[in-house]
Amino acid sequence: MDPVKTSEVLSGIRIRQRTKAGHMHVVVVVDPKTGRELEVFAQVGRAGGIPGSNMEAICRMVSLFLRIGGTLEAVVGQLKGIGATEEDVVREKGGGKVLSMGDALGKALQRYLDARARHGLETLLTTDILEKEEKGGEEQNTAADPA
Image (cartoon, rainbow, N blue to C red; front, side, top):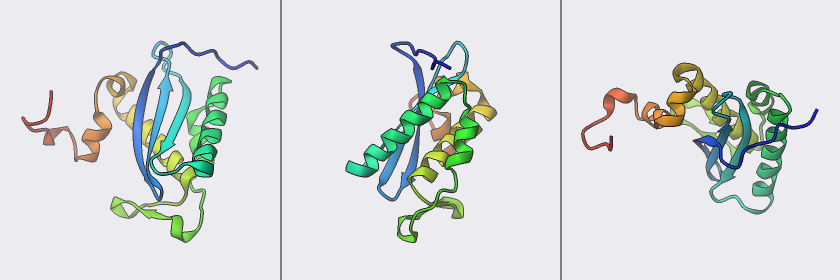
């Protein structure tokens, strides 16, 4: 099966996820016409060298999988729970743990899927809903927040 070709310009949603090496910035690229996820890119703040190149390799394979008809849910199922050494674990608010870079990517993608299910793709593409949720919901927006 040949991978779907992508346009020169596509929409994407960025998710920030904490890791031991700094914040991971994950971008899920979506075809706005079909709503299908086509690519995933991730960059980790202070991780260069081998960790950075490993993350690039994972994202290339995830993107290829998506473009040949795979689902993001299947990707999340493979990535979430991958562990590393105890010194690599990052504690999250609410008692959760990020076990590794792979686990962090899986958790970020799951946050995207959860937000998409709750709010719909159009809302994610046009608002900062994930940031509002992290701050406790839209009702906490104040007049000082840019509209």
